[in-house]
Image (cartoon, rainbow, N blue to C red; front, side):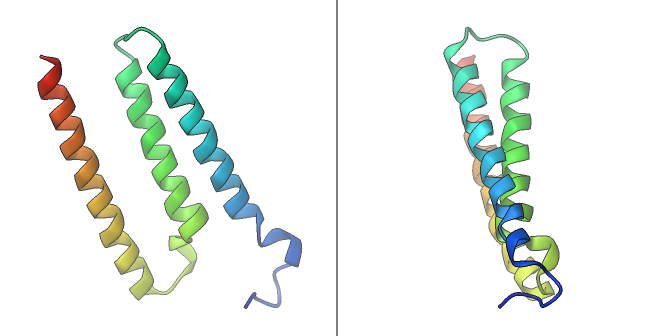
Length: 97
């Protein structure tokens, strides 16, 4: 159910912007992967991954506008994603040397 004060046309604006940010981020990361490795590529890819995760959390999941229990559960899921990302990144860094 939607809030009575929210116009029906604006309900999809947040998720639409989040999807656009995520798709553009995937496109840019793919483009960075096709270029020769430079010193700024890893930092740019990590920054894009963080931006896509924030767009997912606040745009699609709506962590900022939901009850505290849902925020707690979503926070645990995003903490798990961060842990998996960190383990993958450490594995990548050890293989490069």
